Image 1 (cartoon, helix red, strand yellow):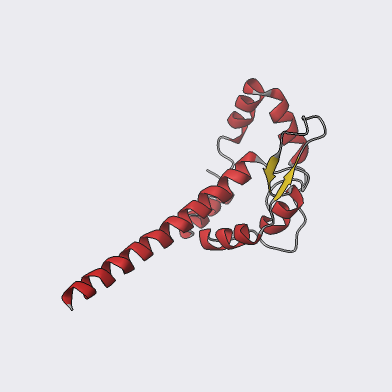
Image 2 (spheres, helix red, strand yellow):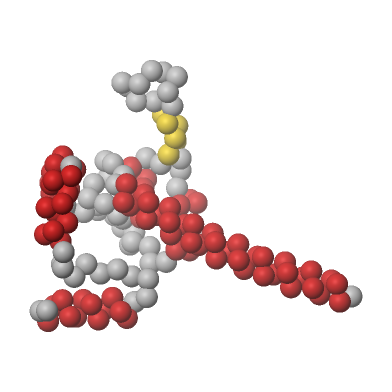
Length: 146
């Protein structure tokens, strides 16, 4: 293991909940992507040269992700190739990129980034739900004691 890889592994261990790509297995993942879906690999290879340019930093915690998601505008649209009755709903890619600073372009939302934002938001909501359930249980027991 090189010194750089050791350092990045140590950084990952110092930051709970953070994943640091140490480079191990990257070549195998690229080969697997080429075999499974050549066009997806090509898109990834072409788009990884640049990142989204935004003034906002990548959110560091699930609560911050949830807050940014709550502030993001949602739109309803129809693609030109779809029948007019077919409608879609979600954020615009530019708004997503501006809110989270994720991905390689502000022209589309990566499924991996969308899934990560959703999962972080679900975790934040779960923590809030547990806190509220605990508070309700405490209030109920206090009421019963009266």
